[in-house]
Image (cartoon, rainbow, N blue to C red; front, top):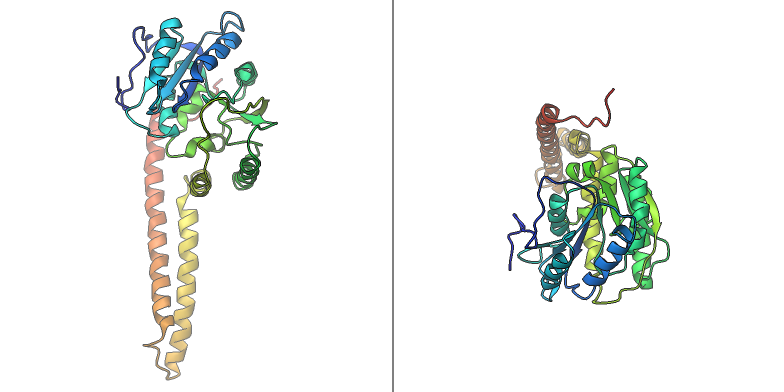
Length: 332
């Protein structure tokens, strides 16, 4: 059975009412993790179910185009326990789309995300839930003792240090796939591309409270890791996007205007120098500096125009937001 990613269907035969709410939703994106899913569902039930905290919870497995028996396993888990739901995407759209689909179907006031490979420990779920209920909006897992190869641990440390320096959101492991959100966060922060890794930084820029909690980390029991060097390149460009979104999304003229002013002044200075030479009788028509000065001045005008367009779009967007809902936490 295949399901349109734009309108994902629930695992039959017992789809819950879309209006019903529950306390906790756990969204688990999955790609070829059929061997891990039953054990993961069992451990979650032992922690939050009848034998655990007796929380009103649901588990949403999202099959991101798996080629193994993941979908059959999800259907079987749903038949055994209606709190386990499943969504199947038409193809492998990536983790961001899987999370977005799962978040859209989540009914919990607290929404958690965790990986399906059993490296995240469901026994840590109560710590996340307690932190959110204490008043936090985003809680990020901190894998104190990572069970990963040295190369991946070093890359992760560099990544987290760089992101923390530029975004000013100091976390030990922002890239951790084990996170918890207050429902308002996932309704406010759009997730696309690979920006799901930066949700804490984006949430902090929106005024949400972000913290971390130590978690256990286990070695992968089944399947294989999909971590590769290409993620470093993608992460660099994603960081540039996050820096723009967190610092200049509401004031694009401050970025493009400054760049345009700098290039325009450089071009004008070169043009003034060439004008002086021309007044002294020297020929400047064949000088490369003439072309450079013209190019820099044109770039300055273009960057300034881009900043003005950005300001116009930001102004219109703010008008729509004011007409719909202001970001007010409480009222007296």
